[in-house]
Amino acid sequence: MNHDAEHVQKPAIAHLIWWFLFAQGGVIAAILLPVHILVQGILGPLGIVQVVDRHYDTWANVIGNPIVKLYLLVLIAFPFFHFAHRLRYLLVDLGVPAARSIPAQVIFYGGAIVVTLVTIWVLLTTVPIG
Amino acid sequence: MTPGWWLRQRHYFLYIVREFTALPLALWLLWLLFEIHRAAGGPKAFYASGSPAFIAFSVVCLGFALYHSYTFLSLAGVIINIKVAGKPVPSRLIVLSQFAAWAIASLVIAAALIGFAR
Image (cartoon, rainbow over all chains, first blue to last red; front, top):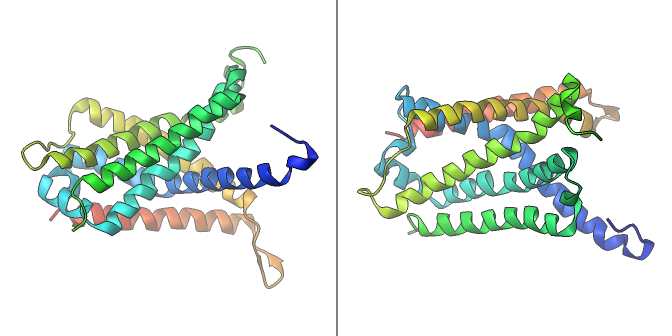
């Protein structure tokens, strides 16, 4: 990390963005994710309740909706910025100092950006709007 | 730091578990993305995941997800400082509001996932 006085302004803004994404991703994962896992991952497959993603008709009907697409983008993409940060520091904590390096940051946060782009592509190409 | 330092104290271990929750949650979201993408092939190509292995995977992920929610929403009381009429809102109240938001969001999402199945 660069703490030179003349560079203070720029890294501060970059940090603000990454911290916003980290915090936002953490909140979204905390509030939205458990119920998706419970309903879509456990109750639906076990046949305890009818779930929208069990049949093509209902699933395609829902994921063709632009508001649902936006929701799914938020649900999937934001948490990856949180995960990227956590996993990078997990490696540091477990004794991999290389996880602090710039290449490691590019891989982890770049990975989150790639997941975001893939999610946008999947949402736009699967049951396209209109 | 020596290898395995995090295994020596319960507190350190739980800290590492909290950081680790990111991995199973990331994998589950990638599965969800895959489930969405599967609908691209049309009704004949589509199938819903339902194998015992997938359900077991989800059960494990749910455990980590609940731990992430519990630890992350509890932290909000430390991070968020709001003043109402010049007085700071007690952190217990802030944490309570976070857990209430979690409960309400869960009910709404469950209702949507089940309601739109008809």
